[in-house]
Amino acid sequence: MTYRKAVAEDIKSVTKLFNAYRVFYKKEADFISAEKFLTERLKNNDSEIFVAESKNSELIGFVQLYPLFSSTRMEKLWLLNDLFVNPEYRSQGVSLGLIEKAKQLVKDTNACGMFLETSKSNLIGNNLYPKTGFELNESSNYYEWNNS
Image 1 (cartoon, rainbow, N blue to C red):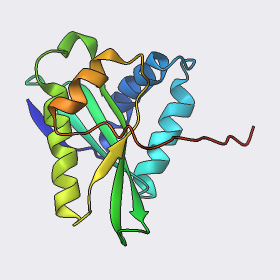
Image 2: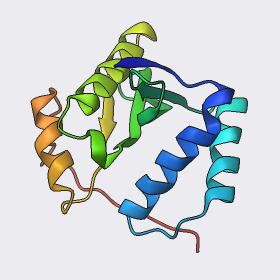
Image 3: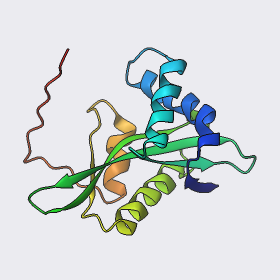
Image 4: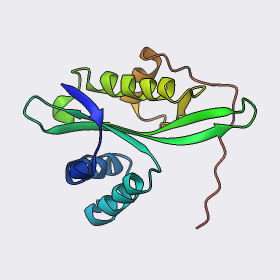
């Protein structure tokens, strides 16, 4: 298994994974919009995307992080927004490898840390994240406002 930063030539393969990720979260499949979205993220350097590549050069998972800043800490902070592994390759440590790439990004950019959000129904994620050093912050309230 190889873990590396995604490049423009990976867009079609990452789009397939990204679309499956969105469907997991109850969104309709939309390959065209997903490809456009990912292409813009890479082109504009809006996010960092790392991929897991199998021995036969198939992309089997990805993690996408967005840069943020913590005003109280006055430091860079990363949002681990997306993590997905092809179901055929789960339970093989692929998610662990992708999270390690995310942790290395935090270190390499001298950021103070990273955070993530996942649904309470995501049993796999809710079991995985504490095993990789993430701590559930039970003292915070999470609020959301949508412009729609």
